[in-house]
Length: 430
Image 1 (cartoon, helix red, strand yellow):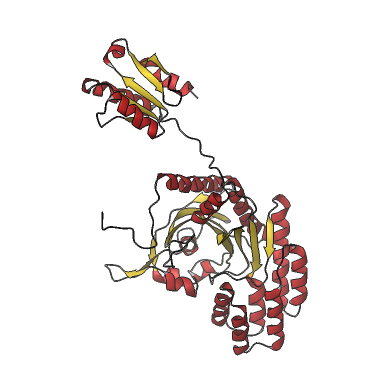
Image 2 (tube, rainbow, N blue to C red):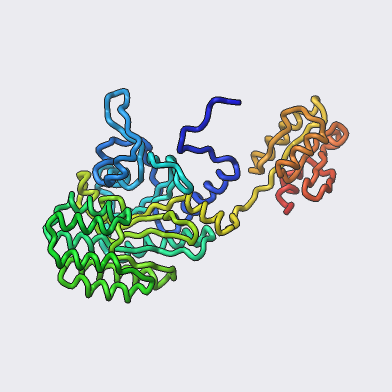
């Protein structure tokens, strides 16, 4: 038995799992094209300073950090947005806005491995930069719902909040950004009582504590009723009222063309520090982990030295989406290509078998050749086990007449056909 194992928190994706992952990625790519997003590829390794700037306290602690051979402090990317913002602040600085960018790839966080959480994980990322209008936020909600639907998921629910409600209140109370970030980390962990105690310590008024307590207790699926109640709660905080109105406009636009279940939670916070507006996560029943999450971040590109650029985005957690698909017994809509194997009946037939395989591959028909030198019966049995569709048996008698034996491995029927028409005849088969 080998002593070598995968590093803890990493995993191998065997063919069936890899097929699911590639399928989810392809659906995400197809949607990107449908909505006008262009794909970019950014490095897995970035400077630590870039990734740490606004990632949030917990993610900073969970990054894979090391010093490279040049003495530079670098890290494996824990999320995509920082890399995309860097690109927009530099090489895409003068690109026409809005910019609609899409990425797919692996990310790394040193979390405790558990169901639905590995240290290497995959995401598809959509970023819309250059619009501060609610239409942009609504599009990000819509493309997320579209992806989940396209992958066959149902009964998913969007938990939606707005960072501007909480930050608006805390700003008016004179609580500085660093302290606000500390509070947001507590709220992200559902430690509401601890957050309220900390807010008191930071010198917030009794009114502020009472208002926030009511906000933390307010949530529900009747979106516009919850927003009305929240607006009344925060009426003493002008920017809080503005944030509630912004969220109302976003939801009106998003739910006009697409119906999805929502849970409005005004006291909801996410771990990343760069959010400035609407934030959300999507869930399915019986899976407690968020399938995807995102929100608005209007100051990040400026932080990296770019022009002030409003932005909103979402990260789709492909690993968790695949788990949800398995839980809901969703069938993959993958069109299976007909696979063919060419089997020479003897060593003398190898050259002819290779020529036939080459012709089929040039015609884009997936083709392998028996390279082990098995008997015809053993080669057929192995091909059948591996779900190959057709076998082409190359024998001397048929070859003299320019023909081969074509065997359907599903029906066990076989026929002798001419090599000249082989491509045409194979493509015509169901």
